[in-house]
Length: 303
Ligand SMILES: *[C@@H]1O[C@H](CO)[C@@H](O)[C@H](O)[C@H]1NC(C)=O
Ligand SMILES: *[C@@H]1O[C@H](CO)[C@@H](O)[C@H](O)[C@H]1NC(C)=O
View (cartoon, rainbow, N blue to C red):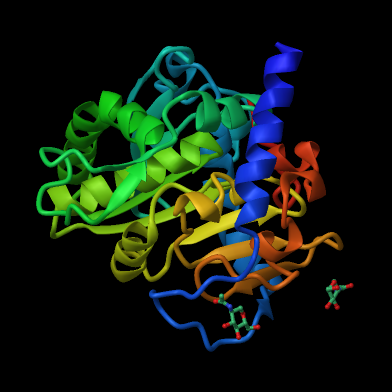
């Protein structure tokens, strides 16, 4: 197992380092400066941090909202559905936050060794999206094959729970969240839900997000979710894989937690400034495996 992990890391090094150089971006041109978030802006993410963390808890507890600290942190949550087995399918839950007035969708993540093996051991090729789930999305939009297959397992069940929540609580606001693999799945869910529910207002707030798709995918995400946030902690290496060499591009909206715990907003896709993940962690050997779980403003991911 150790040997396997080492080979995965070596492979990722090849993939991540070869494409660490700045590349031209066909997407949205970033002109804004890198700016620090205010304390209030950081605090506003806190409920979503706990929702991302709560997805690590078993569905039998999230359906009753008795999962301990992560559930108690969001006392105004009304659970609607949960599922997954934490093995062949990641745990997930759907419900309504009466304070945020938003449907919440969250998928379980993985520890750093697992996410690196998901990225490398499954097919990491970029594949066209499932045209039944992602109706009308251009065939130029491609995503990680393993992430796409994992999202497809729960897509229609999640959609039906979201519809129920929207009608029960008379809302059209949806926020998807998650950490690590869970962030990748929830980013795909955000796109899927926006395609299936065109009148809904959808956003994504994720943590330790790996790269999920190609340039056309990043551009589509940017056009649909102007308020998207993917929050990266210090030298976490998961956000720099799969490598840009393989054609992977992050959407805009990175918030990076610096070594002194300042949060900065990084303009553009894959900003290569040293204050942002892509510049701060040019190869996985510049990364720190412990930074993946957090802390994100004091919250470590897990149940
Ligand atoms: C944190 O580090 C950044 C980058 O080195 C620096 O610009 C900023 O002033 C620091 N903030 C604090 C509060 O020390
Ligand atoms: C990174 O941020 C800077 C602002 O400090 C901006 O000028 C630059 O265009 C951004 N780079 C990318 C690749 O978006």
